[in-house]
Length: 278
Length: 307
Image (tube, rainbow over the protein chains, first blue to last red):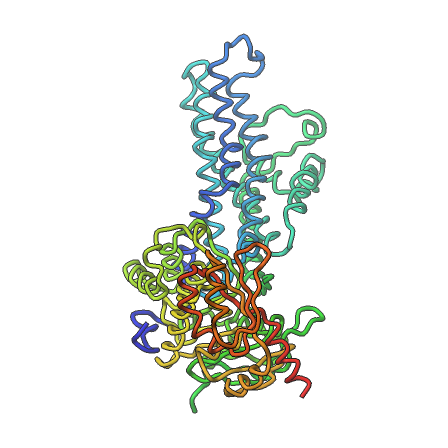
């Protein structure tokens, strides 16, 4: 602290903010540390790891106790489609992504980040990357364990042919976390209390995916569901009208949604003021 | 023509219908400037505008010649110590500083060197590996200050930096601020306590109800202040021995104990002499916090506004 005013410039280009990549990496490290050891992650680890525990149970309980129509592959399909892609990955996205900036606002730590020579977009991108890393770390290993435990319940025959499905499922899970994460990031930077609108979106609006016609295309779930190879039997409207859209179209729409939601979030966060309560 | 490090040009800022800062035009030169005003006067808004945290509703705020809002590159050269007591509680003091230094563009080795140097400056090096969540209030204040100075900024904005500190560390921070001013940095430090500002600088901006009331030498304010009794609250491990020592000091008008028994509240007619004389007794009695409620300053402002 003794070498005068010029020292701050030593060895750095102080005429420009840090590059987006360097800044986002720094924020990523900070955010990841906060996420890994949070109560939110403990809860999510339990919820997202539950299928692995169920699979172990399925393997250890006597076969007579298990309904005969519920084979290992059927149970895996139910878990992949309904448990993960339809319900708990969107829920994980809701609880993490809406909090990316809200946690800093509520914790009043945002000024530490906003007074660094970094583009504001790097803050959001770094935090989004940390969210994705955390949720994927909690989801993918549990999915792999679940897959192998359930598909080998009655022997290893046909396992090799099913492995590509596992990779496809994991790809859809990544897309689900990206798409819902981007949407809920947008809600998080846009609204003061984004959780209730997010829950309404997930458990009210997304139900229109079960209707006939073009309306389901205004949901996220219809594009994700169409990409999955498993189509477990459904009852009611879903059983009657469930649509399967072309994979190429699904990928294109999901990519556009992710880019659109994230781009809008970045723009809003970069231009918005955050007035923190004293 | 040289550019003022910090410049407000007819800057106003309102939150909905509430005007927090009203048509402020001022240039802050290098050195230490005290921003003095009662709570709610607009000091924090002034500093947030200066630190690019808020955009002016009207007018301009310029840092080193560029708009403070929306110019992230300028933060290579700016340090900001916010008033709020908020941290990522799970980080250690060292991690906290190193992360913020990385985000200021330093490599890993330099981050560590600078972080340790800044922690040394605020006497926290021994506690560098403890989590901030376990720090005392004074330690939290100091680590917050450390993050603002670690990258050796040319401009430094400190919002109530010695609030809640014990007398020894208060002195240390005051000396640090004075030294930074002598080094040619521009330091703006806010406080609602006149003697704190006076200990750091003679140049003050008086702010009240969002307006700059006066700009100039602190001694003029001191003359007004001396007409009012000054209240000081001290939290001590041994309040009785503190009271015994304090009551013998000159110019102490009254003394009372707080409801929880740890606090001693003193009224003095000569704050300067009181602060000078109380240090020894404060250390012996284990004083951990010392502050002055702002009613006294408020009354001076009322007096100034009424003139």
